[in-house]
Length: 231
Image (cartoon, rainbow, N blue to C red):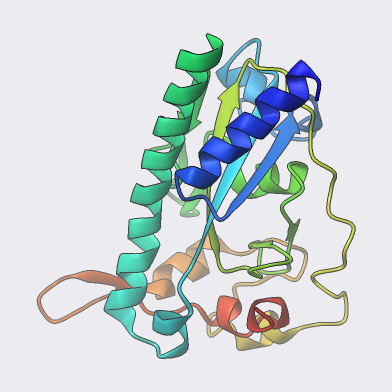
């Protein structure tokens, strides 16, 4: 095993031990179409690789429409991913003398358009995941993976370690003729071209319980996806 392959295997093994369900690796030159300010090299000038970690979402809260549990899983995955990304970054810096930047799975982020309720993370984790061979973007703009469908949460780490990128997914995980998520959306927020209206989606997905707790109460586009139901 070459030195680069050995390092890659060690990093993947460390990520697995930390609890990642999926691990993908891509090179920084696969982000040529990312918007200005959102490329790995905009965050780390000498970025060479991006490591993407995924955690599966639990089926139970989704299938039984339990709003509070679904919200806890959703927000808890962000915490777990933050901890994994930090620990893996420490591992790489300590073992290889590398630089590593873990990026928030959700917030904070710089770009926010208040008028359109449009957010853009510092790096798009789902597009990084596509570049790392973990899946494809579906019509509802969520990442679809072969193993877990669109029921995953993501985080990315930028590093100056040169790593061999993983192969891209060649499967048609979101068939062109399928409209299930489009038709299921109560807000008609899914445009059908792998984008959504964040204004329509955000205004409906979150609601408040009697004591004022904010919870997610809509995930129809996740639930109806055949790729997710096959898992």
